[in-house]
Length: 65
Image 1 (cartoon, one colour):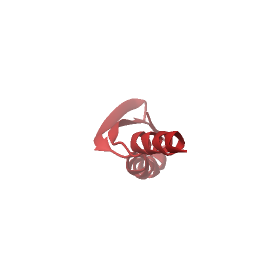
Image 2 (cartoon, rainbow, N blue to C red):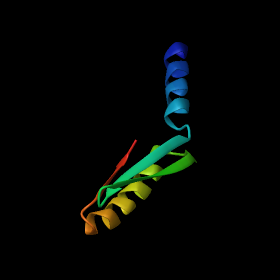
Image 3 (cartoon, rainbow, N blue to C red):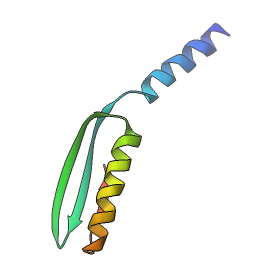
């Protein structure tokens, strides 16, 4: 049972880690990227989704990498 709790603790630790992510947008044939440093994936995804909403107005799109 202790091994199970230890394993779950390690998995939770890595899942909550902050990392670097890149949001890559293509607008009017041009590619622009923005790097999000030391953030959770959900935070980076929210920001990239907001950029995608703006890019879609101009016929572009953004993707988190």
